[in-house]
Image (cartoon, rainbow, N blue to C red; front, side, top):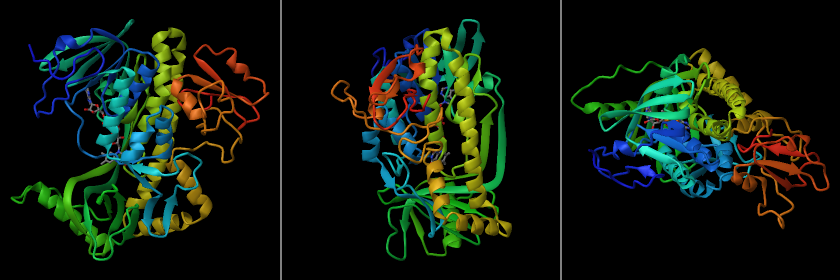
Length: 501
Ligand SMILES: Cc1cc2nc3c(=O)[nH]c(=O)nc-3n(C[C@H](O)[C@H](O)[C@H](O)COP(=O)(O)OP(=O)(O)OC[C@H]3O[C@@H](n4cnc5c(N)ncnc54)[C@H](O)[C@@H]3O)c2cc1C
């Protein structure tokens, strides 16, 4: 019998041992059956687990890795993601730890996308290493009552009429776990997606990217701790500060990179030398990389699951869609999936009448990810298309991006606020991201603004003072909180994920 380590209360994180080897809880600790099993304890799986638990759904997260990987990966949280965190009352620690960006770089000192004008309580992007984001999201999931089991790998997914049976390997042994629904949040190479028989469309772009986390030595004054970029004959370079002197340097070379070789210097030295040479060639500024913490070179790709649902199996995050790093959209899109799926899956798990909500999730989020893919694809072509017509494309795109309306539009799209009315109280369309608005009846309800009211996890019915209720409110069978606001002349209902019904 394996030794049980760390906290083994029924709902909490299992393992978390500081030791290197993976020591797991006793396999008998895993429940035989749960309402919802979330496969993958990355940021998306953990956010989904927090949402399910908020709605009172029994939820088990099965995570293959024993501990959160220290690799930075996603660095940027956009305005809409910060709004989601605010809607759950957990934004403060992210804002405390993160570094605020005023703009997003486009590869030229004269063309950046300023966030100051976006209609959000968070008119910025926040740089925060993914492992920190994941840790905070795990805390929130645990606080809400989710069970997170680390060192548990899902190797089998079998559906029957009553639900889904997962095969879980833990400490070298396998056992079945039955769930009414399974959410595959297990990343780009999703086992759940493959075993559920959901194909993924894949486009591998002919562009290499080099990403380095390091300190930067500059011959001139140290660059401001804000994102910036350069493009030259040999490539594009983007610089994203962590805020503590470290930088994420992303290089898009316009010539093929040399094949990887293993020489006595070791891959780390070769990688650093390659990044250094590229950086010099692109910027010509004598910038030097120091204390390289992480290096990655990869081919950019888009990958999109053909469906986000197969009967009782749902997909979210990278399991459903993979983007190139342009625009920092991958993690943000996954968090939006989790927000959209959480309340719907909780409703369907509690009552089969709500099963149709899951089809709405699959449709809505797939369309949304397709829009994001068009954006990340366009930015990728601008950044990475090699010389000749690539330079012409960049010159045209960067000239366009200097026009104020184009910059405003790009800021809204990057921030994840597409569809939000530009004027307060303006036209509202179903599925659009609701803005935070002040509430008026704070003497009778404890919430001062919409995002605070959404922390209950209920739909929120916004009624203007002396106005009539939304006719859909009377037919609503899910929890509904009615509040008053003078931000609108008409009543509206906002879903628990912060979008208009
Ligand atoms: C270099 C790089 C830079 C990036 N930069 C950005 C950025 O700036 N902004 C942004 O928004 N996004 C960025 N991304 C994308 C971002 O990292 C992903 O979108 C994000 O990690 C997706 O989260 P996820 O939870 O869906 O998947 P993951 O983070 O991949 O988590 C999946 C989890 O599932 C677990 N798992 C896998 N298989 C199983 C199994 N069979 N059983 C149990 N557990 C399993 C894994 O161990 C993992 O913990 C970047 C990605 C890369 C590679």
